[in-house]
Each structure stands twice: as C-alpha cells, then as structure tokens.
Amino acid sequence: MTTPDVEVASVLDAVKAIVPKLRENGTEAEDRRWIPDESIELLEKAGVFRLAVPRRFGGLEASLADQIAVVEEISRGCGSTGWVAGAWVQGAWVASLYPDEVQEEIFANGDVRISGGLAPTATATPADGGYVLNGSWNFNTGCRGAQWNFVAAIVEHPDGTPEPVYALVPMDELDIADDWHVSAAIGTGSFTTTATNVFVPARRVAGAAELVTGTTGDRSNSGASGRNYGLITYVSAVSLAVYLGIAEGAYESFVARVPGRGITYTNWTDQAQHPLTQIKVASAANRITAAKALVDGYVQVLQQRADAGEHPSVEDSVTVRGRSGFAIQLAKEAVEELHDVTGASALARKEPFQRFYRDMEGLSRHGMMTPYTNLELHGRFLLGLDPDTLFL
Image (tube, rainbow, N blue to C red; front, side):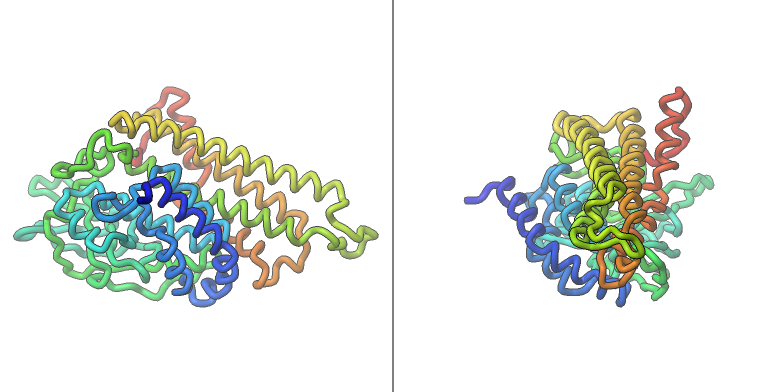
C-alpha cells in the first residue's frame, strides 16, 4: 500500500522525467498560444492535477512545499506550462475552501482543472436560489483546458454596499475570446472569459472575506488540517515556483550551450574560459539559490501556521508578499545576467533560453507578483504604516 508521501514523490519523479518533452513542446505552445494537448496529458498522467485535491476525493492533498516543488519542476521545462499547471493546482486548492457539498461536486472525478482569477471585474445579481453573473475576466490562464472557472464579482446589496464574492462556474457556461496576442508567456492561453446572464447556485458563491480568511462554513477540512495556508499567501507562494523554475531552466539552457562555443569577432574559442562568463554564471547561480532560500523560509512559517490551525497573521502575509517580490527580482536578475553574455544564436526560436528570458520578463509584470509592488507593501509594514491593501 502506498502512502500519500510516496505518491507525491512519484508525481515529482514523473514530472522530472518529462521536463525535456515539456521544453521541446514550448515552441508549439507559442505557435498555438496554448500548451499542447500532449503536455496536458503528460501532466495528468503524472498526477499533477491531484496534488491539491483532498484525499477523501482520491487526491493527494500535498503540502505547500510539495506543490511548489512540482510546479517549479514543470516550469524548468516550460514557463507557460508551469504557469498553467500552477493555476490549475491553485484552483483545486481554492475549491477545497468551499462547503463540502460543493467539494463533492467539484472533485467528483478525483482530479480537476480550475482556472480563474482574483480581480472582481463582473457583477453578481441576487436571484432565486443564487446569483446571475455578467461581465468579463481578463488574463484567465488555462481557461481553454479547464473544467471549472473561479471568478470574482461584485454583489450590490439593497443598501448600496458592494461586496466582492467568488463563484465556481462550469467552464462551458462561459465564452472564451480569442484575444491572447502577447510577447511573453504566450503558451499560457490567458484569454478573456465572459459570462452573459449565467446563473450560479448560491452554494457555489462565497464571500471574498470568508475565502481569504479561511472561514467558509460547512466544510470538514477547516481548522488544523495542515492545508489551510490563507488564500493570498498560498497563491503567491505557488506562483513564485514558476519564476524559480524559469530561472533554473534558463540557467541550464545557457550552461549547456557554452562549452566549446567561441565569442564572435574575438580570439576567444571557448566562452567558458572567459572571466566575464564565469562571473555571470556564478552570479546567476547564487541569485537562484538565494531566491529558493527565501521561499523555503516563508513556506516553513506558513506550514507551521497551517499545522497549528492558525490563519497567517498580517505580518506573515506581508512578509510573504515582500519576500516573494524580492525572490522574483533575484530570479529575474539571474536570467538577465546570463542574457547579457549569451550569443545572438540564442535568439533562435528553437532555443529554449530566449523563451525563458521572455517569459521571465513578462510574468514579472503580473499585478500581484511584480517585485516593486510587493516590496512597497512590505516596506510600508516595516515602517509602521498600514499595508493599504485587501490582498493579504
């Protein structure tokens, strides 16, 4: 009989084995602006989409550290594939915050792919037995391959008070626009989705305050289950794994190309012998190591909180945001260090390095993950000021 830990380890091993194929499929992902079906099938076969599903539904209920390790490894193969896989893993964990009745519906098949986002850019109008959704959500990563969508909307109460809510909606009830034309993270298929008079039963709609604080009622996996990490801190932590994986993939791609390669228009016949290359490689390697150490540190804190049945404190949440921002900055700088000394031949589309570089540059501009926004938030807290954000 296998234990959950053994099963999670087997998922990581299976993902490591398919990294070369994910990297190879990166060009096709960019051509179609969506990851290839083969890549999705490989991830599903590896068990990736069971990672955050509760064990009582046949899932692995992996720890935060294990989820990060798997998403990081996927991203080492392809940044776009890692971003999509990370989003789907996060979606499954978010669904576990809903009442048991909803979880039974969502996790009926033992694994699930849920896309979505946190920005409330639509309206939810109360109706008999639920709500009617209208509006659109940009940057809906993975929507083309998802079964469900986690969407945010605003409910306006009779007294005029607005309340953000989150709803789980079957993907086939939403329209997907063909509008993902970008220069980075091209394969993520982060198209715009739209709801037009879509009815959502009340059981699948939860208040943002409840989800963010982990206080949704009628669920058996609340409290000290060891998996209640806090919505925003959890999303930040898992997303950060993509940046680490991209930096590692770029580093590997660069180092593999260097030996025996000369420096054009110079007398250097082996770039590996040039001191500047040596310095850049060492700088990149140490930045990646430092970024991973930052992540490991706050993951331990979040796990301790979850094991004790405690929601992350404001200080925990702000620290996660700040250290995530700095870790991303380090990972980005690592790739840029290598980009400074790579040859023009690395610009060829068949070369993974140029794709890792562009994905890092693009994803580091994500609204919740961009380094400067997170460092500003952390700095405000360290200076005794109000964090001035609800996303904690």
